Amino acid sequence: MGRKKRLANIELLRALAMMMVVVMHFLRESGGLLPEQPFLSGDVTAGVFPAASTKQLIGTFLEAFCIMAVNAYVFISGYLGEKKEFRISREVIFLARLWFYSLLIPPVLLFFGYPTLYGEMGIYGLVQYLLPIETESYWFATSFFGLMLLQPILNGAAERLTKAQFQKILFFLLLIFCGIKSICPVPLATDRYGYDLSWFVCVYLTAAYLRLYGSEKLRRHGFALYTGSCLAVFGVTMALWRLLPYFPQAAYYYTVPFHYNFVFCLLGAAGLFYGFMRIKIKEGWKADIIRKIGSYSFGIYLFHEHPDLRHLWYPFLKKIINPAGKDDVFLFLAELVFCLVVLYAAGLFLEWIRDILFGRMKAVYRLVLKKRKKAAGVTK
Image (cartoon, rainbow, N blue to C red; front, side, top):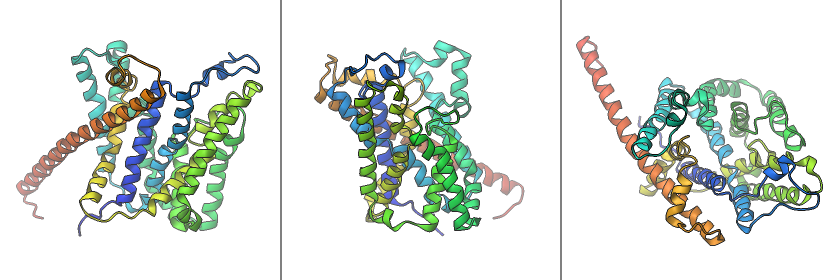
């Protein structure tokens, strides 16, 4: 039996989610978001708003529509995860993929004279290349790798629990990790804002529950839920922006709408997923290209968020598209499109090379294994 093809519409969502991630990282590096530091540091005069540019207002609006991307990525795994049987080779390939970028990028940067963590920190920087999971040099990879290891346990639990049991467990998980923090005006000791394995487990189980028991409203109104959630994130942020000079005690809560475990970030991701589930993509070469781009999308993250590159690519690309460094809205949008296209294209190219190398290594391994079996007198 041939290997079952990935769903092209879901791979399209995966590719789009990575575009959203690149956009968020661009906004972070370019200063394209409303400032939060004046509020958090208390450096605000009562009734006086910190300066905000049109660029930052536009950037915050874009961020509100992109913040669902990470949850959507995890949601895909939870909804489709039961179709994947546990194989240790998946975890090994995942780690090899991490090391491909983590270990090969620094020598290239050193060759061209760019600074690296190893050059600045010595062995402490080297450890981040060698142990990307343990050091969280890629925070998403650390949490997602833990989720991969737990996947068979979570799938088994989801299948064996009754609907009522599943509902109760999921209710309390979401209450603790999402509901309470979404309304609490102060930071909680156990809250890592959705940047951790515990939240990924919550999203995974939410998707698994919806896979098993469904939701007709979500199926029919996915994109509406996504759009409404994005507008809610932006609306809450803007309302707090206006109120904080008068209520500086709410400075922490001003950051909450852009936490991954904020309630509207979860609802928006579910809506986005169901919206794409309704998209029909005809089989053919276009669907195959979408599948390939979707499968390569994670590598785009590993490339541009490498600890040596994450603060380097924006000033480098800005000099190309905006050498005068003008602070103009149209140039800001031009920078956004340029950075998105360059990073995405470069990431896909590197993933294509990696895929070829890994494919040849796999072929060599199979050939060696076949020869060993033949030498041992083992027949297929």
